[in-house]
Length: 195
Image (cartoon, rainbow, N blue to C red; front, side, top):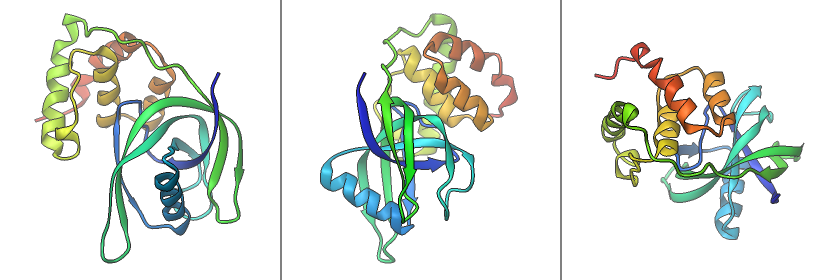
């Protein structure tokens, strides 16, 4: 198994491989992290917060997360950094430590990516709904390569974008079965008003 030492960015969000994550970065620890990631062409880990907050003292994250790489960035005149990261691979935290600047760093084990599986015809409606959501959201989502025939891609994007409770999203990230995710989502679509 592949092990990496990476900085972690605990957030109130769940990112899957293949997903996009727009971020505004202003805290010194994360500005430094982004600079290092860009210079060294390496990623950072996105984990759901278990205890704590996104800003200030380092939060305690859940041990399952997704490695993300920066695919676009810009700095405004006020020095605030906006970036778009793309999820690449799930990982599990083995050990973590908080640096003096409150940046969390961890040794993580990379997990295998899901196999590619054609979207079953019975879930074609979910793919159509996802396409509408992505187009309504605008950039960067509307311009991403869409894989609407891929069960893993469709189910992951819907989990990321639908207003599901965060712990449900995290539980679905734990699963490596895209068809069971689609089944789960299909049973709950009547909860959402997507007009």
